[in-house]
Length: 310
Image 1 (tube, one colour):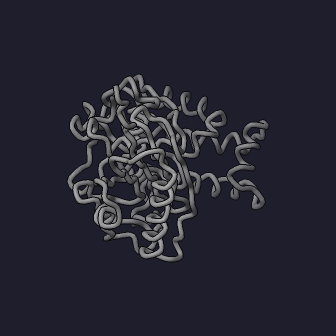
Image 2 (cartoon, helix red, strand yellow):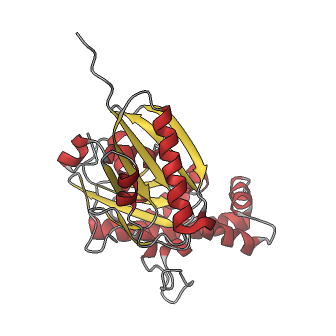
Image 3 (cartoon, rainbow, N blue to C red):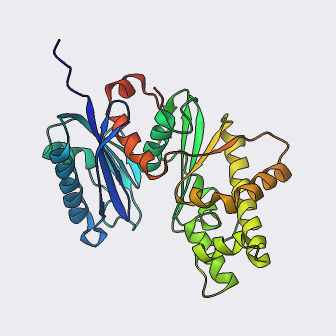
């Protein structure tokens, strides 16, 4: 009997620092993988050119023909058209880019584009920490704070694609100005950027890494600052729980790698803030969540079921 060709898909996670991609098997296996710097200095033209080169390189490395391309991009995305509705200056000129149309014109495959945090949630729901769930919230703690909401296997997008923007919940009215135009947004207090600011307030020579190591080493001012960091994160999580009532809130993004320094203070703060039981889990897939989710988004089974799971 003739062996069926492998079902292969290409997933790309496009951020302001790097764009990472891989050829993914139907079982989630990585068959070719590559990462390049995002050339933000080139604006829309340079970013699109680099994206096309990355895709072409991965296609050349693929062990067989692929069946679709999925792209997770930073910014607010119209998932129906694959167009960027809004992007910050982390991706200069990216607002208005018709990503799906541009890539589909360059490569003869079905192309699907969504917000990078939504796509990471798809990945965690497929093969990660939410594999056993059909509903969950996902908070991504990185340079800023992103989020995604999944209910009964479907992403909740909102009328303008802005559902799940946890980073812009107001937690400190009249607080620190945010680049969104508001003041006191969660991501100004709970993010990699926030950790650097907190670190410099303790010592001008510190950065977020120094700060985390000081917490681990028992430095009293650092521990006090970390307790406040965890308290404000807990406020955000209580708000998510009260608004959405998910069975689990996943925490992912780059800051999850330092969770040994803030997870216990976070759990303590949650107990102090609310009598409700709030289940919080660390995401499992790390920086591969977006690539896996992007590839999964291109698979027929996902599109037919409109599901983040199997």
